[in-house]
Image (cartoon, rainbow, N blue to C red; front, side, top):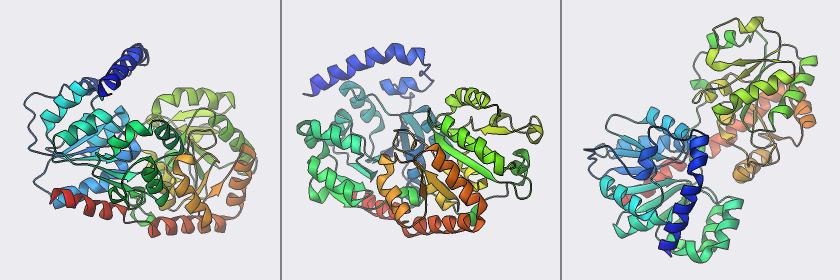
Length: 422
């Protein structure tokens, strides 16, 4: 069966090779995905943590710090799939750590990489299933652990259709530390054993700073033209199809709140140019954050700021008065609402939060966030908040309360990992 899997994976890789070339997906580290690691690499049984992209890397940041504190003699390997995730991983790595890309899940490639790295433990952030990698780790006696695990609706449906194939793979993972009871129940239905699964919570609640820890952003406020009393609406992690809805609502809001500023942060920075074109079609002036300060943004009529760099979204969440979290007005499953809530911001999101269903339900239950189903509702809810500052304060306080009450998953997961590291 694994020979067939290898063959399918190779065929898919060959099919997508022209796509990678056309989309300029090749980067200096791409060769690592083929199993080519630096010569002379010697890590002495490191702890290997895999986090696919930016969100997962940020979620395990506290866990990595805990592992360093508990096992100072151990070096850390961090692997990602995306280049943006890799950049964030390099920013949190310390001297002696090794940041790489996850090898393609082809048997001879993963054997080569595992032989070179020889980790003491392999940790998967959230739930990614790589049959050859997990099987090779198991054959070499290297425990594989999942932390912050979750099974989304789409993943659950897909896994169910190939349950006969994935059940033995799941059973090679020594422990699943999952976010919720729903995730545990889904894993058990897919074939995991009861003793393999523990509900430890969501580490994203632990990785969020709080209002009292926010630096002074006076200069940045000035560059955004946020005079005394000026308000900032941030639309974070937006996807194509959402910008038009957000900009339409914003234009209506300007009639009542002419000093309101809007910042749009596309989910992927490379989408910034297309976002700028959309902004221009609304007769608004796009201003890239990468060029902020190069000219007088406060002199521009109706500017819309566009975040075209990575690693800065939290700074602008900290500056915001109201945050709309994207990927939720279109069928993308939503994004992390914990970050702006922890920073004491009034949070809104759309109806498509299926990738964060448990979190969204938690916030809605405690009136700690607002769900909007259309551009009209987005306009009405933002207008209501701006017209009633006490409601902004109440929503912010409720959001922070939810975040505080759900912290602790990182320490619980660290306790589980210690069972395998000694």
